[in-house]
Image (cartoon, rainbow over all chains, first blue to last red; front, side, top):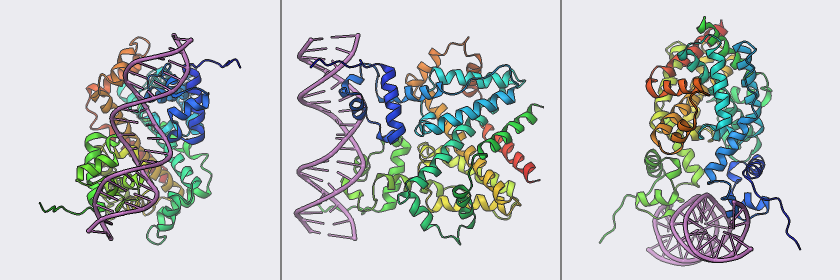
Length: 210
Length: 210
DNA sequence: ACCTGAACACCGTTCAAGT
DNA sequence: ACCTGAACACCGTTCAAGT
């Protein structure tokens, strides 16, 4: 029986890793399972990937590559808005990526987006200091909001796990506002919230730049 | 030789865990090392802690307990400002806590702070929806900013590690604004940046509430 | 009630050996 | 150049046994 199979490559490994992480979360991503899912032995991976950290960094940068880049034709506010919405979308479809985002050093794809975002501010009339603030305010919103969004949805997913105990222990008389807040998350669809706060930030920046 | 030693307790374990995490990061915190640092065997820990997740959750909530609570006498903006600065300070002194913050379900100490923050908004004249936005904007800023702050300082700490390659590979002509941005981080002390953006958020909220 | 030793089912990674 | 088997040094956790 001739054993024909597509040889391993860095890209194939990254894609398989992303598929596994999408399904089982980043904790379910194991070098051994990853190799098995590709039909190879564990050690074969190390011919294409330095180690697990390198694998994860590669996956994160792959994700970054899926995010929209800057349209230099548009005014800074529109361009930043579009980039932010795209980044948010991409992060939501790969639930493991947001956690890793702040732990990994930027790769080439992410560097391009960083440069794009900074360029939008600088060429939109921001000085270095204000561009710096704008950059952080916007990226913080993207990562922070998505992180919170995911933690709420994970909580309601794996009910009976942590979240159940959380809501049960929670004395509704002692924590009226927390109850109200959680209810808001559970009942209302939060489609517009990301944009609402984003616009709050962008308007604030616009006012600062004068 | 009589073997006298202080018996284990949940609090002693949490404190030892925090000390270990402060020193070696959360990856360096192992049930086995933790037990050793206390002079006990691994399995003794499980008499006081359900599992490692429970340990980490306990540590995070301990940290939450160190954060200032709301002063109901002060106007909402002052109260929220003080709570935010305190939270930021505490997170900065326990570098492992910020990462864990969004992964762990809130414990009692953190719940109290959540209620405090929401109460400050609601009793300051915000309706439920706006309080919701305020809560997220502020907590996102605290966690997100601290996370980025730590990732930059870790990068410059462990130079020769990731960060060196990052800055070297970075072509200064292709990424002029990223270079400018990183320089800003390296050279300027960022003492005031957290407060600058915080005030930008609080001012925005104040305008929204009318 | 609390502590412990041995064991289980995993990890990531090195190293030498194959082709 | 790429793949692999065996081994190493770890993990968290279960379970039965001690006191």
